[in-house]
Length: 279
Image (cartoon, rainbow, N blue to C red; front, side):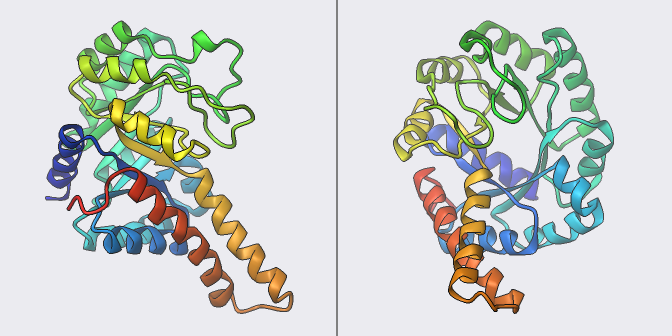
């Protein structure tokens, strides 16, 4: 079963200190690049869909794009930042999805636990990820550094009471484009890894240096979310093509250039995460 294989690779990532790269995708072209790169490098990879993408394209269209993952034993599909029960349930019921993220991180600690635990029961065998603390950027305006980091004791209680399968702590990263240099708390990651048995997820990895990413994985991160850099490189390839040929109109050629530019970053991130050859 696909779900069993995802569990296998996540467990393997903890033992062998690598991370599964989790790439957000929106369209056919991005999905093609991610799947082909994973197959080229013999790597387990996660395709992620956000609620905003579902709203933009519609669930049926998104589901049809993700159908390619059903044919590949090393590609797993995940709902990223699920905030509405309607979308979470749709993804749970879809055969394409192996896991969902239940994001109640903006709620109080007690409410986060209660609502996450409730949806965990709804998920059945599907894997569930949840977040505790605040990952900055698009989600929140951060005013104090101490408000960012996840508390270790709270993390232990949260995982025990919710029974989540993956845990996303706030360790100093942010979603979107970084305005200042990110300050990752590697000691916190290390402490969480030593206290928790579940895989740890790093949100907001776009913009981190290779060294920061490697140190995070060495400290205990097992799943790395990547989105903004994919969009930036896809758009770069698109614009480069149009600059060279302003009269271009064949979308296959234009998107082909965008795919090639994006492919470079996908192959690179798989390698940096240590997932290459882990099948």
